[in-house]
Image (cartoon, one colour):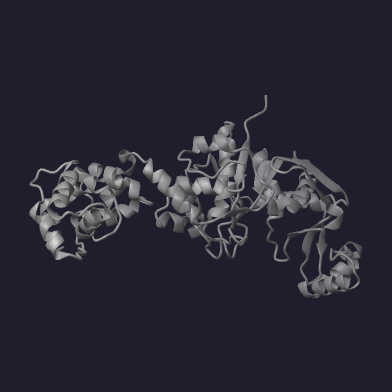
Length: 448
């Protein structure tokens, strides 16, 4: 029997998560959820200059808003001793070697290679240095960076998304794993932590395909089992523009503050670019049942941010009052009237927060629109006495029609404009009893 999977989402706390980051987070969480597995949140915070505690906390908050509660949590910055031990093993095995070239020297070398029609990959000149030459460079004050020596072979794997996949490592430069200042790049700590933590499946964006070829060799050099990989397409805007965490494109925090439901964001982030039609899926279990990594397209997952409005509206229109209650009360809507109000205005909402504007129409200040004072006076004259109910609107409009001879749009539109100040809105048969006779009478008289 196959053991339950352990997956991970490993963002760097260098900015706020955006909807593109939500895609791998959700795909991992849903993959584990559907298989009884576990989800690890690991903060890859080895970038000491840009990583902040503010962003680390924001990542946890954003994932919680999406409904993702990690089973495990770790920070790479707490694991440096483990990374150091792995680096020493690779050095002892001759797979991690010191290089002394400056960035300027490397750039000149790349330009020469390109000028000669050669691929601009590192020529391993550092491997030819003698002990004396290395000592002389260090005496000059040079501190080495460290590269991993790749085997010149093709690394192949069966990708969860792409099927058979491979990377020709002979066409790659030996990657730098340790900077001259001693800090690690992403590659080595990621492999070491995945191995040490027992990650079984690595599900991430297709921009990591080449990294996978390199990382498989590092797993093998450390005598560690290689996880199963899956590389999904990346979420882009409709015009193909990539999303940037640093630029704040569609940040999860911004979407939350704008009033979008997590279910709408989840649905868009996960279903776009897959064989499943993009639709509003309220629950994580339902969404997990729809996700099949092998059905994700190889083409970019283009989305229109305006799709969120439609998805959000569909979730709101199906939302029971009990789920909306606390949010309505927070908008200042009295509890005694909130449930009836919700039933009337719900079909007209895109976001729960829009209810505040309709409550203003019910109980706040409105500028009545009255084009024909005589028509308004006649409507006021036949305004039914209270109590009002769902039949009052029909009885009133019939009376106005009999008094004025108006019908159709000429009957209903002037009344809506006088009562609400708007040309559109909820069904007035439900809205009218909420507004009440005194307010309606005042508006018909041109007063708010």
